[in-house]
Amino acid sequence: MRFIRVYTEIQFTFCHPAMSALPLPETAPCLPAPAATAPRPLPPRPAARQDELGPLGRQALVGAAVVAHLAAAWGLMQLDGVRQAVTEAAPLMVQWIAPPADTPAPPPPPPPKPRVTPPTPAPVIAAAPAPAQEAAPAFVAPE
Image (cartoon, rainbow, N blue to C red; front, side, top):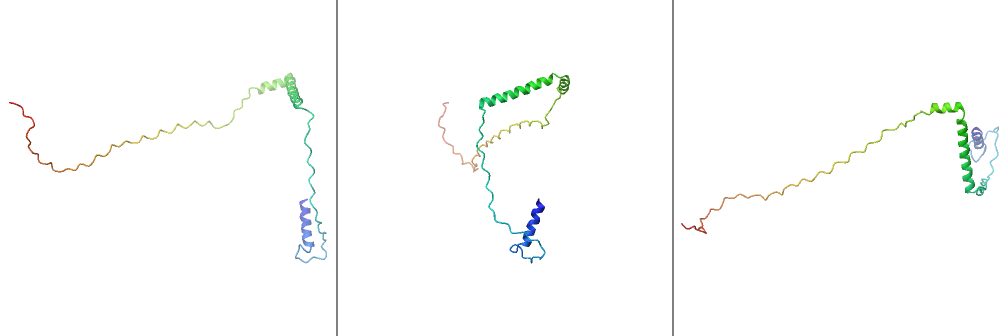
């Protein structure tokens, strides 16, 4: 289908004088110019679905289907071949291949306590001591 469309587009390009700057060969079969057509409108949208079953009827139908499946499974289990196949497959163990669970990272250590540095003492200016004056004693012990 793609080949036919490409071939017709090429033929139209070569045959239509407005689309091609090449001179037309006299023996080239030309296709008529396509008529301008409007696109077809979309079909009308179907009306909303009207169910004849209400919610209870739908639930009853689902329940009946589940019961029918359970009855079929029970009936199959009555056959010896099916029962043997089920007992052979029963010990089948399936393990998911998954990476081991990540162990939680230990909590970060507490922030270090700030070091308390004692205040630096005022610089001591060393000067020669003042000469000591001999002062009279304030208290004299009796002899």
